[in-house]
Length: 285
Image (tube, rainbow, N blue to C red; front, side, top):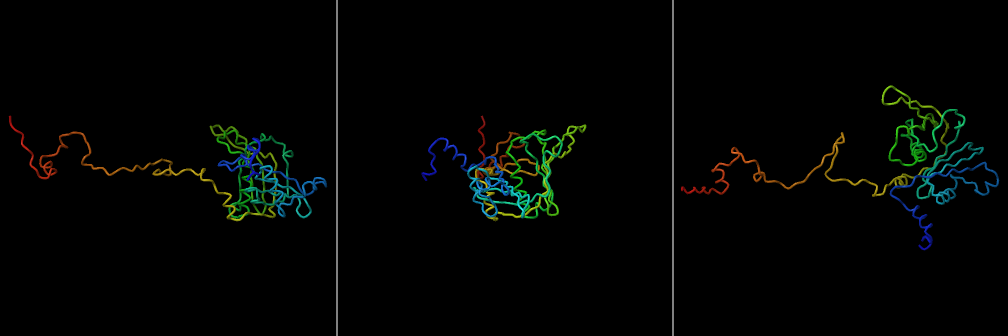
């Protein structure tokens, strides 16, 4: 339509960034404060309530091109409330409400910290993350939220930040550690973990999960990203590549071999191949 046609180069670049891509951009997140804000802010923000009405979240998601959101609120019914969620095509896909029971900030832990922007290693402990569907979606949400940008290479010294999530007895414990590489007397260093904060004790409250069909649709990859299958090539368990070559059937009787006396045909064999004709005698001089 004419309404979607860009009138300036800047608008054209903006729309090109929004177009579907084979390799998606790094996901951005919206951090939204709600609930007990002052009257002016409350009137401006129109009191966003994600579980009751998602239109404002979807509007801000499309406006800021953010596919993740974290909504914080506090009230008597649900104190210290966090809602973590993600979008698909600018509509809410998954949304999980978590209650904060205990919180230790980054400043309260007097240890050395990792530099800002360090890519974390994520560890999930607890069978419930693989058994329960709500916890399985929460695990996927947390991976999306903390994974950071995709990088082609990682150096050993860059692996210095660990986020550990433990699910046990209906609670989720989040802990942050700094990886310390100590001398071990050999090439591989000895690893120690030092807590650096923040840490959270969480409990799951309400959930809003996408249907199985919509969730499968959100995971669908374009054909351009799928590796092309090469014909007649296979690999064994050790990674060795095997190739199969298709050739026409060969007549081994016409195969050229080394001329050896032992391989020469006798006169009787030659006459049998020629149809029984007797070989001509050479004229004597």
